[in-house]
Length: 108
Image (cartoon, rainbow, N blue to C red; front, side):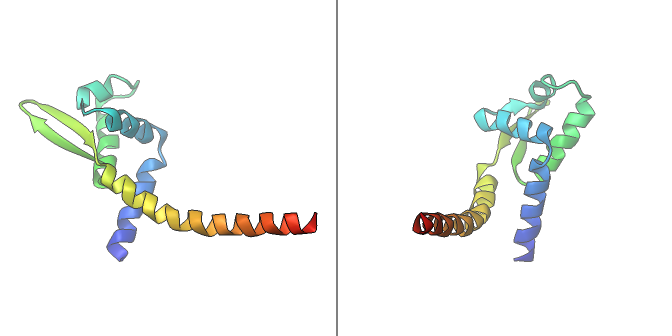
C-alpha cells in the first residue's frame, strides 16, 4: 500500500507541471524521439531531458533506444491507476451533490 501511495505521489507530482503534461499529451498520440520532443520547447535539451526523467520515474512514459536515438512512448496504464484512485473521490462527491440536489428540491 505504501509503495502504491508513493507511486501515485510521483504521478501527481509529475502532472503538476504544465510542460510535463504537454509532453505526456504529445506522446499519448504517438511515439516521439527525444529530439522531436525537445524541438517543441524553448528550453535546453537538458531541461527537456529532466522533464522526461520525472515522467519516466513516475512510470508515465518509457524510453527505448533504437540505434543512436531514444524514443518516448506513453504508459497509459499508470494514468489508469491514477484515474482509479480519483474515482473513489468522484463517487464520494457525486453522492454529496446528489443529496444536496435532493435537499434543494425538497425545499422548493
